[in-house]
Image (cartoon, rainbow, N blue to C red):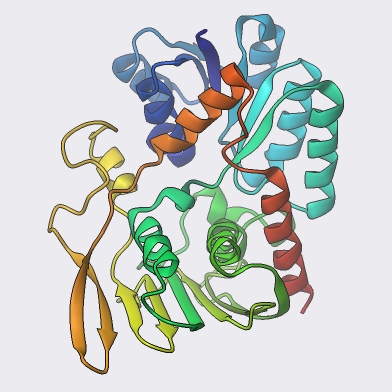
Length: 339
């Protein structure tokens, strides 16, 4: 079975993440891309010559019978309306996180998919970051002892407000760092340490002209007793460690963001030599009172999401991401915004 796939949007989500991954998984066909930009349409034609370019979502849904799956990589406020249209057309759906701007909208989308008998999942690709996979393996082996603190950051240097929708969208329509990065960091924390009882957030707009949070902090206390602290910033001249995990017997530290996104931007593709591994050969470290040792970082593998999705669509296996997990993260974000 070939899963005929249409990707809505060819910005960062569609161009850097979804299109290359769909094209790389043998059971999927990148049948169409929806973009109204002539420049982006030209890129699609050059990189994926067998792919149809559609100028609007109306055109896509008018031809719904030609597709099996819709991938929604457009701005956050469009996620729920487009997902509901796809569900009504009988198409399976992948939504780039978050599912919607609110948890209530997200539940509406999930309920509609269940009622229609279509599959719906969320692209929480950071579960397949190499450093996250490495940390999971370290924790499963108990190498840190009892974990007490989990520090996680996602920071870069972009001191001026841009024209990208993530900068210009209002908080009510899903703009800002918390809605951009929070779904990833919260999801990773819950995957590692379980449900959350308490949260606190500090959301600041630092850049001139900014009306969304661009320098944010959030802390959560898990039922397990672990305290998670998260930093999300567009104005950090130098980033914190990506992960710092403090246990009763050792401390795990990894530096730098997963390389798959910059590799994809540079034109490298899943399956090519070294894809998903840092070119500089960096390692994580575990430090104990006895000293420090290097930990080899596993290769990141976002393609695993589409491999698991292919299993779900062709063999009735479990979806790669349960949408309920993404709704839980949105509920925590809403609690943080309310204060």
